[in-house]
Length: 114
Image 1 (cartoon, rainbow, N blue to C red):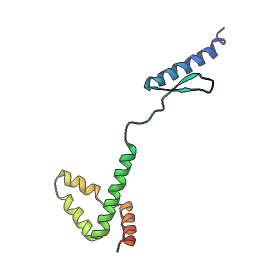
Image 2: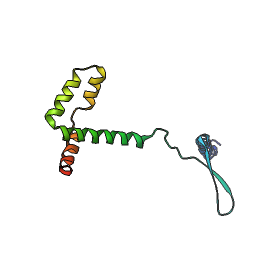
Image 3: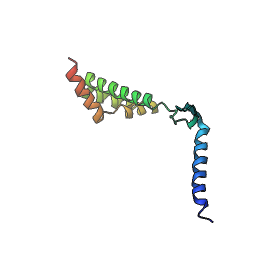
């Protein structure tokens, strides 16, 4: 008798799971035979990940441009002068430290720019 309920319990779990997913919204479609089928809306994150990645890429490009324009010595002098400043300037110095991505971008910009 207990084994007879196993398929029912699996089906019930699947229905409950689908119903919980439909709490975020549904998309209704009409099949070729005219039956209206409601499916759960696909989850799309609300956090703008593309915008954040674009901002980070622009930041690296800016650092690379400054590194290639000023040169490694002047850039290092400016970063060390930021390290002696306030807490915000020290945070900026930590962000503006030359890293491998910055030097790679600076080398690439030197070949493109006169």
